[in-house]
Length: 208
Image (cartoon, rainbow, N blue to C red):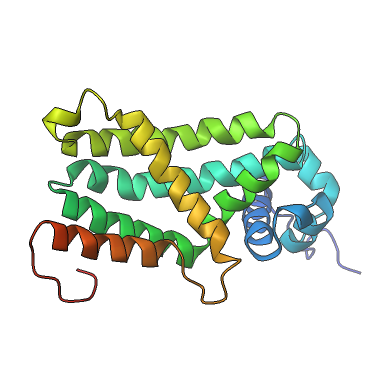
């Protein structure tokens, strides 16, 4: 039997919390909201369910921690580029980059699963909506500079941002139903082609 001197030291509280957040994210992405339970997350994190409830009040609070981690990381990566875009074309190109990164990393799937599952858990829907509001505020700030002056009295940046975010989420949800796998990236690419053609610019037939 291992002695106190040779026994492997326990994982620190901060490390255990981080492992639980990481495990909950992986479970959401791979198994979906319905299968993300205290048992499945604790098993993936390599700790007990008691540890989960020590660090979090329950699974809903843990899932919000996952969403905060994803949102904070993506906000740090894309806030400045979105606000620095000088033309609608640059903004559209950045939108495709964000979509591709978020789909490949699973970050968009985290949000899709939480949006789909939140209404089934009391109190979770409002918390998820509040966090999505951060992204709608950022998109509104980025988009408002490109609304033509004649339309600024009728096109509200907040409503436009809501439509953009809803479109990202809806397209990713529908991806699961399509056999060809078409999704957000395809739509953004084709819209970019249409925009270039409408502006009279030559189109090479691929993303710029």
